[in-house]
Picture 1 (tube, one colour):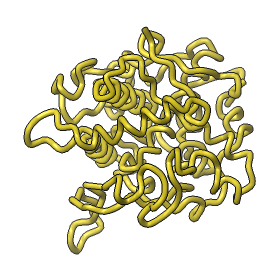
Picture 2: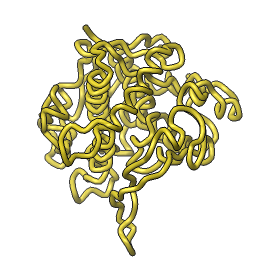
Picture 3: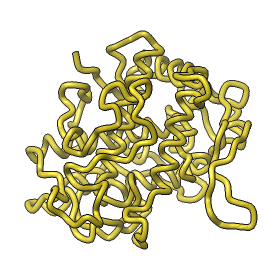
Picture 4: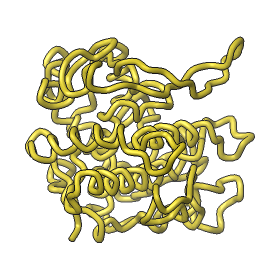
Length: 322
């Protein structure tokens, strides 16, 4: 049975189970000597961002961002997180909830700061550290973060032990709107394309529009910038809202696939080797092939394996995307 992913504002059971589940993962250890399961995802995301594709790239493209693999790589991440939440919750039907940030984008800038998602019974609000909601300092600790090597601007992972940080609306003051989402879903009609040369932040197509580089920060990127704090650096999964954002991004991609009758993923297998890691049949970046962490794909997943979600999960609606 496929899980159903619902809007976190309307599905309070999914909301409460999500909060419970991510806290359980913070105290879950798959193997002696490994970080907790939640932090493995943080490390995975950081390492993917630090892996340029190719290593000589000056375009900003890395193993999971600024290139075609952005959407399938994060879809894989969500599938695995959902699996581990189902495991620790002992609920095989649990579906990740999503945050429909475009609904909040219809509010005034001041109202966006107090939208329902930031309530005490949902994600809590701003702070350095956050002091409200289920991820207030006494309930949620950031264990590893992006730092910098001494005397260098080179980012590194460093251990820490502090509360979650957010600065909602500080760097940009508005979220994407319904119109922004619909414009992205219908980019280039009738010549719909997933991605295009030069396969980076300057590309045409759904992937780059949804990631949010053109005229940015827009769409997905704007959520990270609008939230600030722990959502800003490459260790952004430290904030559980990261997954609510990406679940909505995945929903928009899934809706785009349905609305436009599954346009082809590109680049295909015949594309330049400089695009390795982003082509249709390339293995996506992993940090472990252990079946403990990835019992679904065992680290051998490719974009082609992630184009059809119907067997694993569905979304409650795409009606707002049309």
